[in-house]
Image: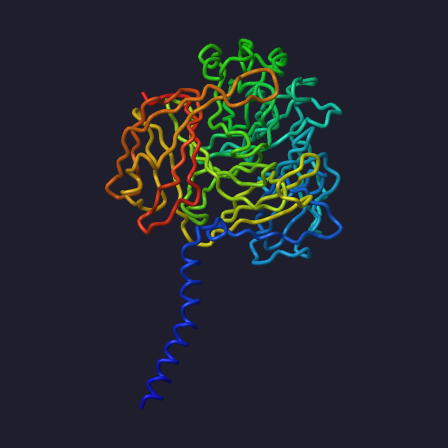
Length: 498
């Protein structure tokens, strides 16, 4: 009997010794913080080995393939682009020899490409898979030999118009007509000046309400990268192309006043009637260094909980940012949030498919990027898991309303010590870029959780017009005790709630 008891004790001890490491391992796994890849999975495409595809623009085609253009002048079609694995044999050449096409669109059986010097449409008329008919749609702007004269085209609006954002000749000058402008291309091919003041666009896209936006990059008269609306008869900041008002007064009106170098954007907007402020400033290096392509989630929830929001690339950091927009005093403004990092190359072109995937193309040629690959085509898919994130940051008369994707833990959400808030802006000046200036530290005096647990109302003393409001919520937990996937937000406050 004694031997039997000893045997049982030995067996129990052995079982406990075997199970304990498994329990500890499971506890460590459960305690690990959430990762971006838990919620959004990256699929890297295998491209043809003898092709360099610096993907700058995408377009879903009627047959389900994806058209992709390369800044080297080529357009490829990708068959079954939503496949679990995309291999080189799914790529076929559609067109070659274009002049740095950076954007694609589709309408009435034609694929449209915005090249450096024109918008071209093309189609395959004999059914062999290659474009054989090319037509110039619009070319009402100038082009020189300067490398900097990029051109980005939008998708078509409901009336059949498209917009083209034209980079300056360099950072400072506009040597040929309408460099540093956005042009409206009408269905009958007219090229109409629409918006002045562009410096160096990195992408153009359409918001859920139909407004065109573009990304501009840090440089002269741009203290940091930003998201700007393209509205008729407005000026968006860089005066380098002012001389072309002489060719555009019939559609644009009179030339704006010269901005004062060293001032602040909101101060100059009160003085210069046509100056439209950036909807969102992307704090330099915190959110990236070279903002690029824009895609809007209109998939009805197929890409997760961010319906109607914008997803913006950054070439230098190889990331995708997320943008929430609202209208205050008749102007767009809002917040940007980190979203997804880890892309293979420098992100340029982005496209949201109706199936709910975000296609991302990149290159690091000439600029460098965190992603070390010289070029890449990738797809970002939602895994079906909802991350605990700040869904929106809305301005109120006395502070901000934060909305979350999941109910929050009231104890952490109402603890004022769990928040950090400070503000800053940038000089509006003719020199290249700007440091953060005019720092302040507003005081959060109250935090109240809504009845459904998804919103927190912050009462704040010291909101600053014209400033980025950088908010950190590292202590925030959801009802299950999980931390925010991204605890930081950056709200650009141009106008107060009336």
